[in-house]
Amino acid sequence: MSKYIVAVVGATGLVGQEMIKTLEQRKFAVKQLIPLATKNSVGKKVKFKGASVPVKETKDSLFNGVDLALFAGGGTASQEFGWEAVRRGAVVIDNSSFFRMRPDVPLIVPEVNIKQIKKHQGMIANPNCSTIQLCVALKPIYIKLGIKRVVVTTYQSVSGTGKEAIEELQTQVKTIVAGKKVKPAVYPKQIAFNVLPHIDKFMENGYTKEEIKMVNETKKIFSDPNLAVSATCVRVPVYTCHAESVNVETMKPLSVDALRALMSKSPGLTMIDDPAPTADDPNRRTYPLSVELAGTDNVYVGRLRKDPSVECGYDMWVVADNLRKGAALNAVQIAEFLF
Ligand SMILES: NC(=O)c1ccc[n+]([C@@H]2O[C@H](COP(=O)([O-])OP(=O)(O)OC[C@H]3O[C@@H](n4cnc5c(N)ncnc54)[C@H](OP(=O)(O)O)[C@@H]3O)[C@@H](O)[C@H]2O)c1
Image (cartoon, rainbow, N blue to C red):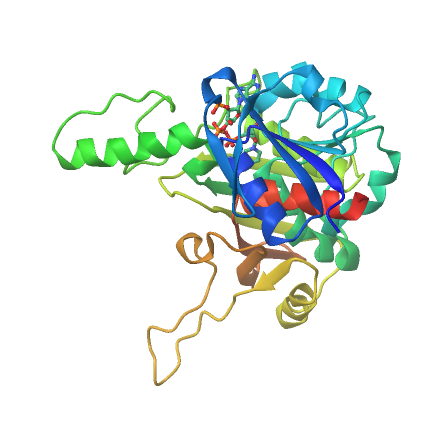
């Protein structure tokens, strides 16, 4: 039954496009799709269920009658139109960071804290892409063992920055291979053949805003202000999927095999963790890889091992598609729960 009028703000962007694809793939009951963007996109069309739907410039009045508004138009669009869409009757699921830390806006990862959605007042926030995959991986550990401290280093793909960043990487690779000098525009420094320990702007304490977001959002999602989290966020020249090196110190011990078995049963989580080569195939080593997992739905964990430097601690490697579980899929899962 197609029941709902659904607006997608940022419909021409990477996340907006993935949202439209995800709504169709998961057969969300869309009666009418309203793709919205800036006035620069008027005249463009998006594909949905075999039809070409014209993109409109985002305006307050276009939210009249809308049941669900998925926002992926950046912080400015969310600030300008988010609550206005709620006032006009829509439930808004917002991908920007603008409302995430407001106490009246639940910050939801369905596998982790769906119960917190009950408090919503029309606006629900989707967490940062790196935070979502971290929380899905931590959830079974948090419940079974308790977590004292998490130290995470991210390896974030360029699609996490948006469509212009993909073009920048492609252009820089061609320019460098041709022996010419690059002129960074989207990123502060060269991204091709490089790693940048710099995502979003630097704060007074030396951390970047992306790192602070990961810390604060993780505490909010687990409703645990005492959860100790330290993050270093790094951009790498990978198109899609964020990878994370995660060190977790727990309150209680558990063998690595038992932890692996526990995590493999956790919703939304898949273990890819068999690094030992076999006698007949010395190259067969399995761990999560960005290039193999782009376009898939789950959060993948591998390289799980006991950290010998503390009594109860583990290291692991966590990978997920930032456009799917890190953005579009998480938003559509929230919508599926609500509707
Ligand atoms: N990329 C990710 O992995 C990821 C993950 C989690 C969250 N997010 C968040 O999702 C949002 C979109 O990211 P993206 O990667 O899809 O960016 P993107 O590829 O650059 O696309 C941006 C989209 O927003 C539209 N837009 C920009 N300003 C607007 C405005 N004032 N009003 C209405 N629409 C506007 C653009 O329209 P035009 O094409 O007309 O310019 C375009 O459709 C951002 O808030 C981002 O932080 C992204």
